[in-house]
Length: 327
Image (cartoon, rainbow, N blue to C red):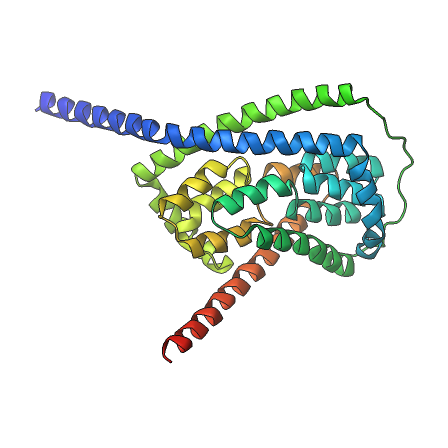
């Protein structure tokens, strides 16, 4: 009996090992393809931004839109922090923001804007590849950033922030800027490749062993409030913990596998467009003065409005199509 029991355990272990190896083997080619694609985009865009900075195009554009920022409780100089984050990432926005000596209220407003619309080109490319309209995503993210900033400026207690700390910008040569870019991009690429392969394997294993079904059941009530289907739970978790760029592999694989419908992906993308990376990025901005729960809850509320609005759009569209089919 004991031998039979031991043999059964051994067979089960061997079976699990085979399943794990099979999952890794299946994932590897797809993960490699995604990694190459995301690296090409990241390297190309970051290099282009380097030249835009060197030739003062970004500072010029920031100065152009700075008067708008006076209407949302921020000094004009905060435009450079926003624009830097919009085209690059949250780290770049923070590096500019900390030099402005913003108070808690102003940093919270700027933080919400940056969290809604950062790393726009790369993250829009990811969402487009997963099946959503690039134009819609850009409009949603940019509009949400300014709408929430306007709303928070109206309702947050405190006064309009108008003064900034004096400071002199350090001008680097093109060679020095390129050296900095090379080091930071190499580190970023290594991090992205590691996460893409790790997450792809993890997602496949979770699916193979039925864990995704358990996660979906647990998150179903919360996602229902947001207007999202339960089957998008894994993608929602990945986007909230890691963000869009790092979670690209899973998002693209799930959308192309057919397990999640195009409409479900579209609804999810409307939500996570303005509410993702709610660990690292959120707490980085909180560490420099933003109020974390306002930066989180305001975007969740906006994301909920966007998704339910899109559901209404689908409902009306289906009714119209159904009506014309009957004629």
